[in-house]
Length: 220
Image (cartoon, rainbow, N blue to C red):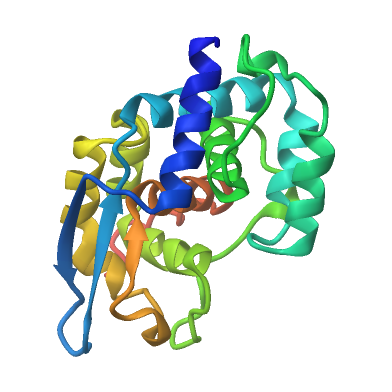
């Protein structure tokens, strides 16, 4: 069996079994009750391979990559688009692998990160803003945009300097956790979040959110 295929199947098996090698609690910010944590899967090679796949796919299949990103995460449209794009028996970006057996949330995230790293032009209809101040945050994607509104540099350092998966990613995200979990909705308090999924949501937010304009000279 080709190595790449083993890697992708390994990711799917780990996710299905819910196996983790490290979990680190991070208390939410002051004024919030409960705590949340981030976990990472013991398949760093597989996650790095997925990251390489995302860059390759974004570079060679731009229209399809944007079509997937245009759907709402977790929606029927996302699932249908994923099946349409990956229904063929082979994909050039998979090398010798014959199928892609990874949850759509991670495939989408890897492709979004690939679009960001390749500097793909963002269509106007895909641009997103940070949630309005005081607006309820309902999804992990909205939490990611909430975080990036005030912590873009930290998110960029993670996405640009640290590969997906593994202890370095988890350590970086745990350092970011107090601020990030202030953006997590109350209904998600106490949950455990996959570190790489958070990373991929941050990458998509970086791609889809324009940086804030610089303050005018002398402005306070």
